[in-house]
Length: 226
Picture 1 (tube, one colour):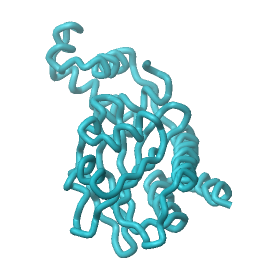
Picture 2 (cartoon, rainbow, N blue to C red; picture 1 turned 135 degrees about the vertical axis):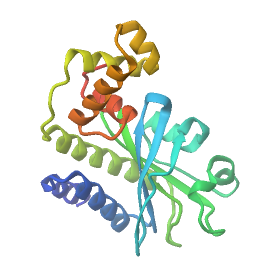
Picture 3 (cartoon, rainbow, N blue to C red; picture 1 turned 90 degrees about the vertical axis):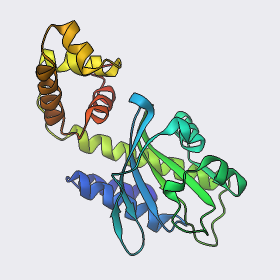
């Protein structure tokens, strides 16, 4: 039943609509009362907030940016590509106040969105129905959901036409993945920093992404760089 519902998402061509409807399906399927959606890049272990969905509103959370290595539950969930849940004292040890808007919040669930070995994002929930019981079976269902959604997102993205990067654009993106700064790239490639920035800008535009980490993550996902 769940797989059939997720397969219906494959008919959605707009990426934003697909993400929103996947969140609605998540909230309609599981005993959760909210859903944060994050994009994730393995470059710098960076998580970037996209949107928070509650039963009554949709809130943009683009101001939230985290190195997940400082958040153990998120880090382990992404490393293992498995849903993780913590509550009580463990929640206070592992969570961040950024995700707490009420004193009643004492639990957190992380559901990685992945395909194959690549995690591209995750759902975060910290409000649940009173009947929620997060045993191994329930967590396995969350894990499966994240993988199914990741598979749909992969198909959706692969059907989106994108221009091929030039040799120089690709070299710049590889150097970003190695951790080089704009100045270091300019010096080693014998070009100006302005030219480096222009290559980055055009590569981001061609890939249809929002920033450098997202661009590099997309190139890793497609197997263009490794």
